[in-house]
Image (cartoon, rainbow, N blue to C red; front, side, top):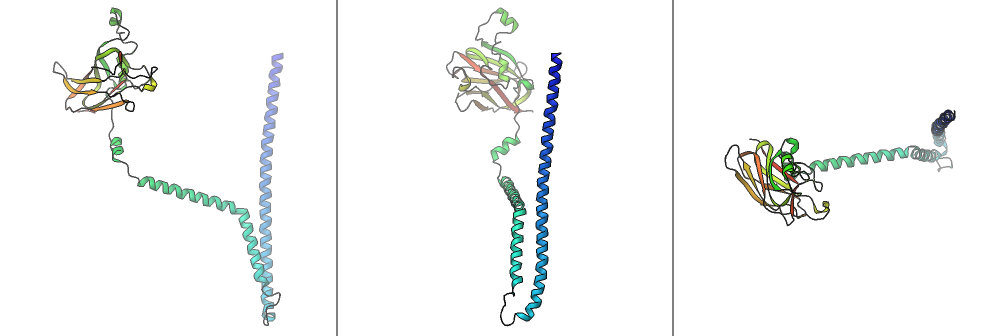
Length: 307
């Protein structure tokens, strides 16, 4: 019973609050409408006053013109020219009323016009600025990373020493590099620890690309020092070779020998390849690092063209 009473009280309170809010809302609408009605009534009264004054002025000016023909020859009497001064008074009154009633509307129109002119000028200036040649070329040329796991690239084989050691069971199950697997090199994540890690500074990784391409360039990325717990990036690779592996038993082709500088402002470094051969398998041979006991490779990207 107590629960039913509490529910009933809550419903009554809710209805009461809703009624109060709706009453306040309707009262606000009616008050606002009454203010508008009073403003319109005052404006109508002012217009009627102006019309009456104009009509009276016209009548008085006609009478002044008729009497002026007979009374204003020997000099200007007191009544001559009164129509001229009353015209000025009426004009001043009309100007004052106009500025008071609709002057703010003219200000809004002026501000809107000024804003539109400024927008037009900014649009024209933006159109007149030429695009630099470097931006044009970068927009026109689309670079596809054929070493991306999302596109179908994968790791074929790895020759390296695991950081945590290995045993027969791990080797049979393929869990030698379970903590830092080689596939991390083909992923876009650059969070600390999401790399291919191995002990020492020597490793050979065979990569299967998403498509057979003519290799034009590739890039190597290492995480920034601020993203590591030890604030150290000595585990970045240093000297490395890249080979193209043709089909069959053909001899592998050396695509280049490079060095990763490990500069703080160049965490991603690109290398150009001059080759006309078509490859789908690449061998990355890591020969050294920058002084750490282990090496981490975060991301490898390969670019080229389809033949």
